[in-house]
Image (cartoon, rainbow, N blue to C red; front, top):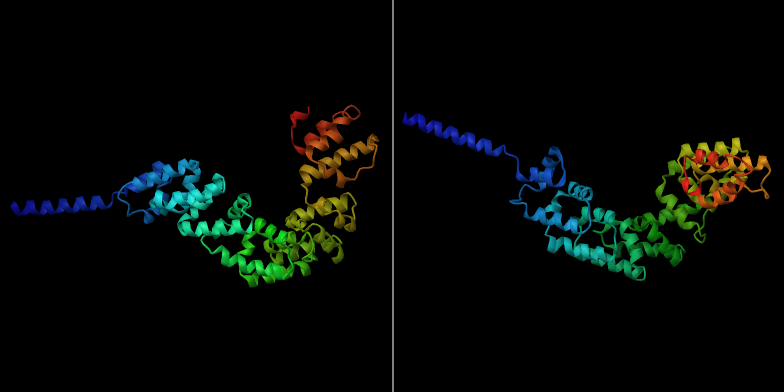
Length: 365
């Protein structure tokens, strides 16, 4: 009997040990109840958190995020992206970084992005990057704020080293200080690439879009070259050619407003068909009035064209307004100038316009 009891005791020990190893780590329940993870998400995140012995650090991190003004969704996003942040020291790691970012007046959505990356850069690196940007931008924290928001993923890099090489390339290619600042504010990512890449990209702008470095539109052109691949640009140019545009007409358009090329291929097809085949505009006219191609066809151009057509048919307009000048007006000015004054002469004009734009606009009633 004594031997049997020993065996039973050993079996019980084995069962207890087996049961204990299958118990979920306390952090799994914590991630589910405190942050809103699913069981699967919590189990996946556990690989970075299994060494924790208590919830003391995670609690202090969550409390800190709440004090920063981050909501539950933003906190969940941060922890989901970087579970390791729950092990960070609030006083030594997070607070010093937050103070630097707070000085810049960064909004909560930007703080979310930056805290996702916070384990990849030191406070010293952040301070050095911010100070360098302040030096470049004349201590204008609003501008520094914009650059940080648009290149937050590069905070772990050496801004001074990367940017100084790029600034030399811009100067070598004759870009003014104003254009350099504009590029930095609008697309800092392209200045954080290699100097060789930047040089090659700059050298594409004039041959592809016809925009020389001295043109006020050069920065816009550079942005198009950076954001669109050669194959995408070729497809879009082919669409213009299919509607009878000559190479010189295409270049006239891109020199004037390169952002026309941001429209998708499908949208370009629809817009060119409307203006050229339905309204009868020539390629030469559109090339010199490219803004027509960037306005929303359904919400702006077609509704206003309908109103303008009605007013011309009723012969109540004193001047022969062009569609281009009419679509350039703000919504408020268009209604005040072309809808409200003619309601007495053209019944239901306001209703026709609001129905076409799918907008109630009760403030004008």
